[in-house]
Length: 259
Length: 240
Image (cartoon, rainbow over all chains, first blue to last red; front, side, top):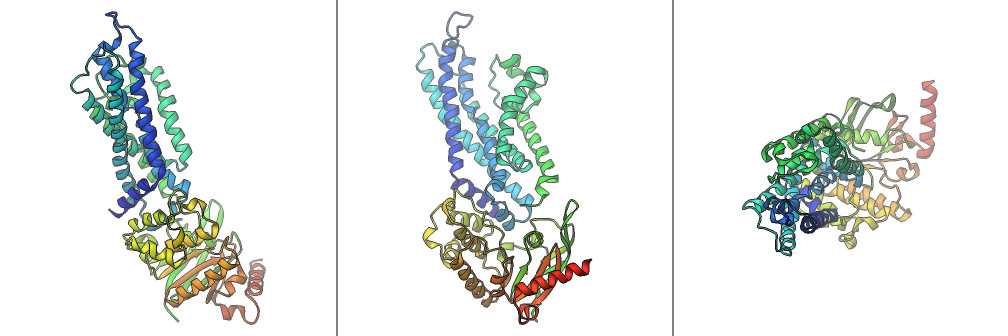
């Protein structure tokens, strides 16, 4: 409990936390706010704007949960930031059992990641609702669309922040760890999905899409929501990846000398 | 002779083929200031990091009260350490940095203000450490070491970056702590300064212990610098 409190203080005291929250709110709100305009310019088979399709409106709300990248960055910073700031020595002097520190960070990351995504998605849902209100042709979302979005945001935030801690433990360089997470999610995996669309659901981004599963009929690159894992399966898969990365870091970097 | 509270027992630490510490055997007497002396790269910091569980010894042990650091119950209440002045989050205030540690070690937050008062940093308690001078960071590091009111202090080059006034302050400060009955192990390569501060010395060179004992006995009628040069040259000749 002491370590948990200490980790919580690190998050609360640091400006970076609030910067990440603001960035997540901005990204989710911008995406959810602009998408209605984009869809309003597309004409569906019926000859009307695609905003008259419930699945499309649901997709607009779904984008409110899209700032998960900041949750993974938060996780990376929680661990790798100790080495960047030089506070790792103080942390491990206070708690020499490194696995305890890791577990405290995992717990606080899960909570912080969930809160970050909850706030970002909550505000973005309001933005999406306001933006959709500007288009008379926009239909109402499905009954569970908003709840699904918030749930997906909270789950993805918690799970990805935990994965971030594991990545930050393996790669002690904060900039490198963050860069790798961003490039992996935004460049490497999309390319792999293009090359091997059948395996999409097994990649991290595929699992994230699974968590965000909103039954949108048309996905990217020919991959539809139906091809992804169920949210609970996708969450377990991502946690599994996090566990593997954590195990590797336990066996390697976590045992390394602290400089 | 007081009992030893810190002991190095055949401690060796290798980085690849490079031996940073070789079979170090030493015991630190309770209630005294012991200088851990040697040139840069002698292995002082490595030995201290092994003692504090931050580096894993290749062989041998480094013990505090007969146990490895990692086995100590709430270690900050037993040992306070200053390893470098870089160990604070630049974006946090002095007080916030200390409160992160008090939380981890189950120490009352009020103690953070007390130790800032002890090291004369109360006025900057709410200032971010980003703008701190090296001397202020060293004092803050000392404050952090004192949080748990430990009986043992391990200080690695605490005078680094301090101006003459800061060094004089440190000397008085360490003596005051020792007079309270604390055991202090302080490493340095500043021999002249250490001569005025410590009770005992351990001289280490190229990872190996050259000599240990009361400073008066080792220095004799000369200076610590003279004794150091004489002993290290003698050890070098014997090795050949």
